[in-house]
Length: 272
Image (tube, rainbow, N blue to C red; front, side):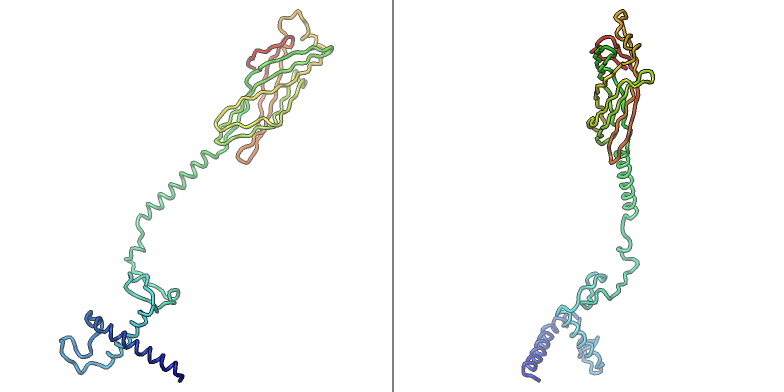
């Protein structure tokens, strides 16, 4: 045996004897280690079995191992037991049926509150995010300007219309198309690419100017006749517009009838 190993083994034995000699009086006073010379009556007992010494050695060995950090606290013994370190993942713990960890409190209350909160959030999401209709409605004729040509009559009509947004999100309005029809004959068209945005829960008024070109000889003569006090021209307006909101687009349309004085200018607004 090398000299270093010999001294090291002697040093370890000496330290074990010293730790045991220091801890034995304390443990004896606590009653943790039984005395070999006394029994329950407090008198010497020479007939005590020899295995008691083996148990004493085993206990001291376990105590030294515990003191050296070879064990960890048992998680199911309320901090009063220890298990060998490194075997936590291989040992199985038995929990009594009366353990409070197997009977969580207010379980029904937590489940009911969770279900109620989920239902409330779902209802609010459906209420605020459910798509609602966007309405297009004509309002009034704001003005009309009449220009007489040799064989035709040119009328520039400015109309106003409303877009109603009942959603909780803004709506983009684009591709407005309007055509004017007189007795199944298209007399004017207009197209606007970008109309604008309509804020949530609001109504926005917009306007457009549509040129009307009357080329029919009879109608042109009717509008130019000075002897008539009023020259009424009936128009059928068909309007369509595209709206985009909540990641989808829709096409909405509306139609209306209006009358125009094709014999004179009119800058007074009147309803259709």
